[in-house]
Length: 187
Image (cartoon, rainbow, N blue to C red; front, side, top):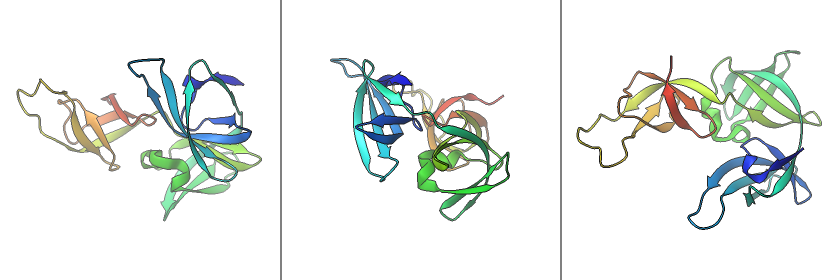
């Protein structure tokens, strides 16, 4: 299936330069001059090499479709993360670095989708949004409206995000796991 270069997201698999690559990080760049492009960090699934590539929205790449299975996150064991196949109850252990920065958002019992290529795990898709508690939030400084009105906060999983000034420690918020950004207060 062909997709536009701007549609590449973390976890996508593409055929590029004759190899099978996984998108690890994606950053949409909109320069002042010229067209926007997607700066993508790719990891070769066969030999583990990394590549930084720019894809313009006018370019198309071949997206590889994989077998997708639902797994449940069970627990963390050293540098490994243990998942269970919800159909066969088989356990699968993946390294934290395989999941990447988003491993911090895994919660006990969370359902994830593991992408398989020839029965080998290739990628893990987490839910797009998770609810987390704010562990620490800087106090609001009155009259500080000239600068950005967002303040840093540390979540219960140790991840730092910027939140609006009305968010305080102990509140539960909705966080985007792909962009690692605050979305809104949790209901």
